[in-house]
Amino acid sequence: MFPEYDVIVVGAGHAGCEAAAAAANLGSKVLLVTMNMQTIAQMSCNPAMGGIAKGQIVREIDAMGGYSGIVTDLSMIQFRMLNRSKGPAMWSPRSQSDRMLFAAKWREMLESTPNIDFYQDMVKGLLIKDKRACGVITGLGHEIKSKSVVLTNGTFLNGIIHIGEKNFGGGRVAEKAATGITEQLVSLGFESDRLKTGTPPRIDGRSLNYSKMEEQPGDEEITGFSYMDTEKPKKQRSCWITYTSQKVHEILKTGFDRSPMFAGRIDGIGPRYCPSIEDKINRFAERDRHQLFIEPEGWNTVEIYVNGFSTSLPEDVQYEAIRNVAGFENARMFRPGYAIEYDFFPPTQLSYSLETKLIDNLFFAGQINGTTGYEEAACQGLMAGINAHQKSKNLNPVILKRSEAYIGVLIDDLISKGTEEPYRMFTSRAEFRTLLRQDNADLRLTELSYKLGLATQERMNKVEEKKKSVEKIKSILKEYQIEPGSINEFLAQINSATISERQKAERILLRPDVELEDLMKAVAPLNDLLQGFTKEQIEQASIQVKYDVYIAKEKELVNRMSQLEDLRIPDSFDYKKIVALGNEAREKLNRIKPRTLGQASRISGINPSDVQILMVYMGR
Image (cartoon, rainbow, N blue to C red; front, side):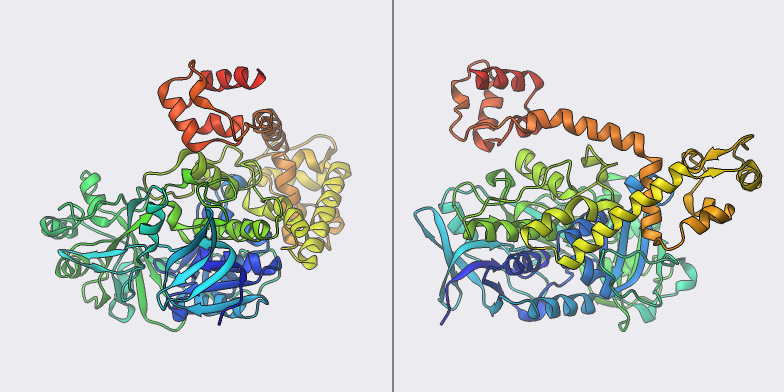
């Protein structure tokens, strides 16, 4: 009934979709197995993509030839570039999406991708032979063979949904949990644990009084996520901001005795940076209110997502509390919020390619690795799909460094440090934020992806044109001399020191209060010289000129650190024999088996002295 596949992807969430697309576009014959064909790429939680650091990841996925950026652009109902008041390293794109359109566009793109087959069934086990994954076993009893398997099970592995004192099996509301895989993997020697996440109640938008809330419109200019010329919406939908109150908190507290979190019925640890509302008022008791973001679910629906009100309290408590939020006095609830507890596998059990150390040809991506967030899942899926293809074709794995991409930071953090709570990406996790900006992901990653065969010729042409144009703009700025008479009025208007003699445009642009677009408006001849260049090219050149010193310093730091990254540790290296190392260091090094001295230095509990000892022994 089934042919043998190169890659089988289990699960069709954000990780699974990117994994299937990447492997198929590289030439593998792919089977995407999902428990429900109607929920492919479903946004299980909030209907949004991007945000702080997450937006950078989506742009990196796009630069690598993934689909998330394109789908987000095609389904967005609002776009905002966050942190515009800060430096470019902190700018992060974020989009509200039409939930139904997002999933529909993803399925449409997958179905139009050659080499992908689909099958609806639950995978209950893996075919393992000689410590190699060679296929899957489905709930209907089918044995489907493949050269590699990618598990992207999300929250479905032995998932339990909690609402107050009620709990029942499920991977998402109204969808059953997946069983069998955890038990088999544990029997093979894998370590598993439990995590939890949650979601807020969904509300009928027709029942809300928006006049009591603060409107949050989108940006006038929609940059979007994809570096390709995707179609952007002609109009946008607003989001809204409101707040909880002391009265809301008091009502929520009446349900604490029935809370599964406080009563101990949930063992898994939840996301620290996206806590439930009951966790927030418990941990931050000194605050008399918390911000809520009121987010529409799409163009043609009245359903509203109440971002910031995630909860697993009893339904009656949720209902009473939310009706005391400003603007929600007459709110009608579509469905209550809930918590979900699920199995994950500590990611220190993986190699950098996301292949498991215990079983060859088996790859993990997404929440199975302890991460939270669509973007974190999608980028893991992309890399797991690439490497599953590479493995099935006997090619070298593709590994992104910390200095190359936020994706590299995320995977290195997971492999080296593991996680005891749902891992979320932040800009602060990256040492090289000035290099890893959202505006230059195409310059950083497209050439690599093109050489792999993932990025198209069209993408590569766009990048080469961008590089050439940026260098031309920088050359003009370096050579063009601005007369005092043509610039001083502008400088005085922005309270910047006037000039008494001609200065190069580049030097004036280095002033923190001068932007290139404004300089072009003030100096007509310069504006004429820069006609024909795109807004994106002009912005990129401006960033490179303004931050040249900082970029150079980070590159120098990368070069220094690469010395440790280039020192490979043999797979057979026996840490137990190094008596100079402490017991904790030996245990962690032996368990994680770092690939390089650089990775060893980032393992929690490994001190600089431990790294020096390793260098001495490796020298021997």
